[in-house]
Each structure stands twice: as structure tokens, then as C-alpha cells.
Image (cartoon, rainbow, N blue to C red; front, side):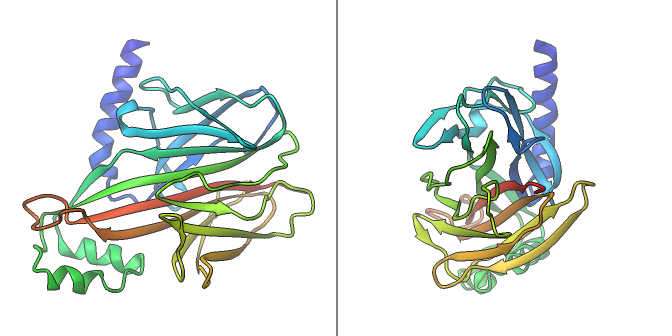
Length: 273
């Protein structure tokens, strides 16, 4: 067992640098509907387009991991090297279970200017290139600090209940429950940063069908920071949105990270009726 966990640690460490530019990070259970008190597992995944590498649990890479149902929130105690990273019994009562995870800051180095330009264009950060150039920052070998802020919605039994703000620096807050009887097929979600709605912000939407085929679309939030996302039964979904900001105390590329990104994600499924 020790050797298995050691191998997981070495393997994951080796993956970190190669996966650093992979975009999304999310929580993915094999089933989004479970029965109360049944074993529940979920993976932490890093990758692109709803396909990625499962990450083991590391305490030093996790700043928050908990489970909520109703008004109750309980810390999830992981073990180093666990894969799936999230393992716990489902709550003892039916409702909407919310898994919340935040990752410790990591660093990525942009060795080529074009990679950064491609990233900011893809994420629609229209002023970032001009800001970088106007500050006279280096265009090679500069660093970015990034953090991950992830939520997953899982139905326990009937799955009734509501999502709520979890106090993440940036987060999605579901305004609909896709497991609830009478769900109309439009998933309303609020996107927030520092507790404030993000207006006109880009959200990437990944929809995976039962065969594992993924489709990608983009929407923007409205003046209230809300997006109304049409969803299909029999699909699981990943929502992803990124905040880009100047790193604290950013001066030069040599002194430390000059950019910081905060990645919000949410996963859920829409059951077949």
C-alpha cells in the first residue's frame, strides 16, 4: 500500500508540469445520483474538454475539501495518494449534496509569448496583452500563479435542495436544481468573484453524453452575473470560468509571478426522465 501511494505521488508530481497548461480542473464522480449512506467517490481531474487525468489527494495541494447538504457542512478528510481523491459515505438523508474543493496555488511558466497570447484570446481577456506590454514585462519566461475553486452537485435519493454560496474566492452558484422534479431544462447559474456577480463574463460549457462524446459551447453572463444554460437529459456538465488579475506585488518577471488566474468550475448531471 505504501509503495502504491509513493508511486501515485511520484507519478502525479511528474504530471504537474506537463499538465500545467491544461485548462480545466473539476470534480467528477462516476455517478451523479446515489443513495443515502452508500459509498461515494469522485475524482479530481485536470485536463481539457471534459477529458483529463485523475489527480490523487495531496494534503499540501488542498486548501479546502468538504461536503454540504442543507445547512450542514463537514470537512472531508483525505489520505495522501488516494485515487479517487474523494471518498466518503453519502449523507444519511436525501437531498442535494455539494462537494467543494479548493486547490493550493501553483505556478506555471510561460516560456513563449505566443502561448500566453493564445490563452488570453481564448479566455477573452481583451486588455491583458496591452497591460502586459505597457508595464514592460518580459515576454518570455514569465510566471503565473493559479488556483482552482471547484464544486459538484450530486443527488442523494430524491436530490431535492438548493445550492448556496460556499465563500470561494470565485464560484458558480446554481440557481436551479437539475435533479428536481419539474426542472425545465434551462440551468440558471450565478458566477461570482469576491462575492460579487461577474457581469459579461465568459463561461465555457462542456456537455458529455452517455457515450462519452463531449460538445463545447460558450455563453456570457448577463448584467446580473447570471447565465441561463440550456441542458439535455442524459448528459453530465462541466462549467468553467476564469478570473485573470495582476499578481499581488507584481514587479518584474524575475521577481515572481506577474499574473494570477482563479479557475471556477461546477459539475452536475441532468437525469433521464
